[in-house]
Figure 1 (cartoon, rainbow, N blue to C red):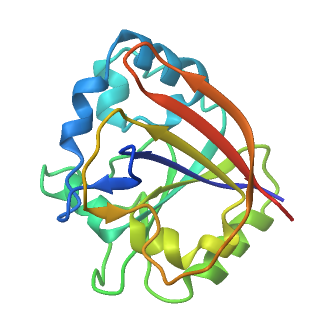
Figure 2 (cartoon, one colour; figure 1 turned 180 degrees about the vertical axis):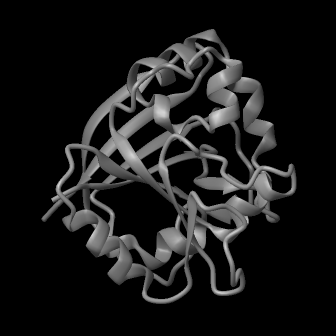
Length: 194
């Protein structure tokens, strides 16, 4: 059974973006140490254009071969004219409003997202599934999330887009590892308690 991993950046107070979902204030923490961490541990989480820009284009996928993202996350790429932002992965976009995919590498999941994720998790592959965001699909898929990797940036937003856009549902995870970076970022990995 493959794992669904929610790999997400957030502020100290748990927001993945401002009230409109913009997380660009976190970009200033992308430094040499952070890029080294991404190259070593999670190269496939970098969008294809970023991989090229930072010399990661030839790195193999280490943890994931599939990505799931929401329409809001996907729209960030579409606004830049990029129809396949993670071309090095199988791409799925959860959207009830996008009726047709603008790219043959991107499959739109309009109905039964949970069922589609369960089918992907049942596939025979040594690599997992990267849940990129956003908050609404993370909330919809909370019962399917096996692992959460939180890159906490040394910022307080005060308000904004939460990590999980869902109603209250206490779900327990176990802390697996903590890694601090010199820029103040902390990366915590949690696994679901079953």
